[in-house]
Length: 292
Image (cartoon, rainbow, N blue to C red):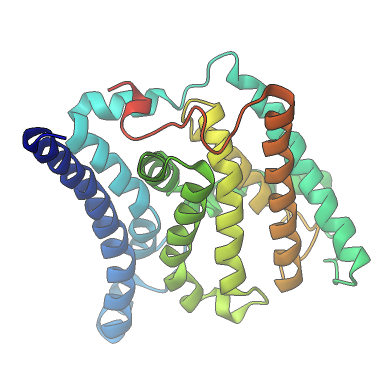
């Protein structure tokens, strides 16, 4: 490689790396920064911003910071056109619509496996107190209640995943990295709330990593459409609230196994049936996948 080509290559590498650091800086700066600020100045801030709940302005900005960062990256990369090109990816074409019933079917299977697994391993099931109508209302309501994590769709899977796929040329490795960084992001939320529940934070990070491998496969098969991540995350995160199972540590292990097996089955189904390696083929990489 000539000195001029090497210089241009290094310049491009530095520009690409700049986008990652801007994303990390905004995402963790807003989320961790606001959390630390709230803890240090709790006596001063709490009378004005109130307790940390889903409607708290600190929480809303913090939980949606990944999407704020993701959209900002697309804006500084391609201006309004860049944002428009990315958002257009959320409109599925006719071929991709098959994934809607597939993901609904996977979610039903997920509920069934968590329910049966809980019974087999002696995990206490919740008492069913809701009617079918109440379950539907709860499911729809959970769209709002999961806004914090879904608010990261435009960042974790809209930017970071395709960015990592470009850097690693591996959907599996990119999924693991994305899930791990996603897990670090939710740590303040666990510090405030979830450590008081029966769930385990390290297991939750592993859940996100394994889940993100399947999402990476799905992302690449749908031309980089994050709407399918939103659908699957919303449905799978609603199971315990619909009283199909209790979200406790042993169920977390069952969920890791479920999405691990699902990812393996999907990988080999494409490998054996179509001769396609989902780890390396048709990767949607930033920024090429939005057509810019």
